[in-house]
Length: 123
Image (cartoon, rainbow, N blue to C red):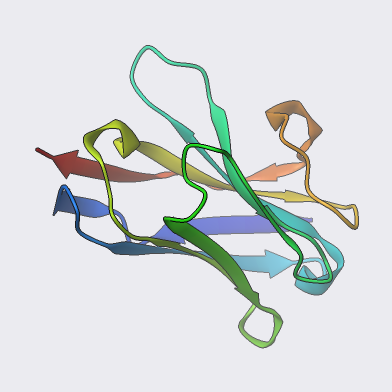
């Protein structure tokens, strides 16, 4: 099985940047499609970005052009570089893994989840 641990969250001003990391252990990391989801208080968990086993990337419209997902298979780590942050980006961010070639935008399609890391963007 796969265990995922997110880190890198924190408090940042609007327009700032933050990089989240998700460290994976267990089953071979490179065989999984990975994704980042986020959930704000009172809101449903939503897809943010995904990356395929071949490092093809996918983004929600709300973050495209501002966020970049990447993976380093040698380090068993997936990253989310977040630039030009907005207050509406405030949420708990979760890393997810799926034993498929490509990621999906539905949270129900993922097999493994991290515990989440809080990102707060102030105005």
